[in-house]
Length: 480
View 1 (cartoon, helix red, strand yellow):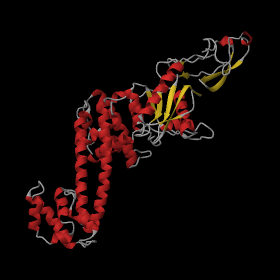
View 2 (cartoon, one colour; view 1 turned 60 degrees about the vertical axis):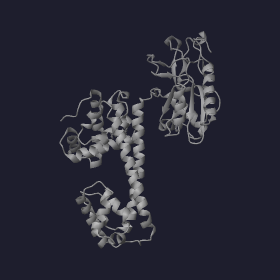
View 3 (tube, one colour; view 1 turned 180 degrees about the vertical axis):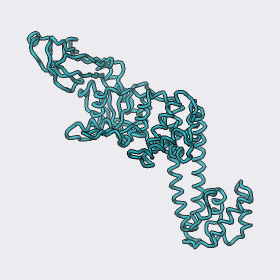
View 4 (cartoon, helix red, strand yellow; view 1 turned 120 degrees about the vertical axis):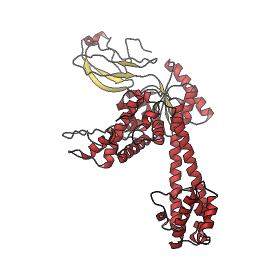
C-alpha cells in the first residue's frame, strides 16, 4: 500500500514533489485502473489525491477550480464477476477495475465448484483487506438460480445486472470480441463504472411464491393453447362446421359437448343411436340438468346429420380424439387449480381489494398483476415502477426533432405489460366512463395526432400502472 499522500507513479503524478509545485501538469480524473480524462491543474489548486479504499465505497464530490472539469469519481473495492451460462460458467476476481487477480476459470454447478468459489472469495478478502467481496453476474433466466441460492445460503452479497448493460460496455471496445472469459471483464467494467447499482434485495417469500405461481400458470396456459389447436384441427376433419352448433351462449369446451365427442368420436357413431339414448348416457357423466343436455345433444345430432366427415371411423384421428379430449380436460383442470391457488394467495395482500376495485379488473387479473409487481415498497417513485414495467418512453432527440413522443422502451417486465394492456382493454370495452376510460378515449380523439387503438391502450396501461402504484401506497378503493 502506498503512503496516504502518494499514489503509484506508473499511473498518477506525485504532486508532493517540490519540483512540480509551480508547474502545470496533466492529472487524470479516473476510475481506478482506467483513465477517463486529462485535466490541467497546479499544486496550488489543492487537487485532492485519488486513492483506493477497499473497505467501503467512496464518492468524491469536489468543487474543482474553474480551470478544471468537475467530475464525480466512483471507487469500489474487490469483486468477483461470474459469466453464467448453461453447461459452463466462468468467474474471475478483480481487486479494482482493470486489475484482475488471475485469468477467468470455469465454475461448475456442483458442490465442489461452489466450494472452490467460496475459497476464492476468502482469498480475495485477505488480499484486498476487506470484510466482504460481492459477486456480480447477469440475469440469465433460470441458469443463475443455483448460483443465487448458494450466495443466499452463505450470506454473500451479490449484484444482478441486466445483460444489456454488460453488452453496452462490451461494445465500447473497438473489436467487440465476445467469449465467456472476456465477459467476466465486461461485467466488471459495468460494475465499476455504473454508480447507481444496488445489491440485490430479496423480496418476501409470499411475493416470490406469487410470481412463481403466475409464471407456472402462464406456462401451463401455453400448453393448453397448443392442445386446443391440435384438438380443433382434428375436429375440423371429423366434425366439420361443428362450431355453428355453439353460439355466444355455448362453448365447445363445455363438459356436455366434450363427453359427447369422447363417447361418439365420429358422426356415424353418433347417428347409430337415438337422441334419447345419447341424452341418458351423457346425463350420467355431467352435472347439468336434463334440459340443457337435451339442447346440446340435439344441436350436435343435427350437425352430425348434415356434415360430411373427412375421416373414416377407423382412421387415426378418430381413434386418438377421445385420448386428446382427456388430455385437454386434464390441462384445463390444472390451469383452473393453479389460478385458484394464485387468487387465494393474492387475497392476503393488503391492496388486493384496491386493485380489484378498478373497472375492468377482476380477481384473476388483480392477482396476476400483484404477482408480477411484487413488493411495491421497492419502488421509490412512479418513474421507477414505470421503468420496471418497461412503459417509460424512449427519447431519441436529434436536431429539430424533440423525440419525446416515441415508443416505449420495453426494457422491463413483459409479463406485467401484457397484464396491464389486458386491463385497459377490458376497461375500455365496459365503457363505464371512469377516468381510465376517459383518458383512453381522449388519446384516440385528440385533435393533433390521434392515437390508434393499440397505442391508446398502451398509454392507458401506463396510467393504470400509476393508479395502481398510488392506490397500493394509500390502500384506497377506486372511485369515480
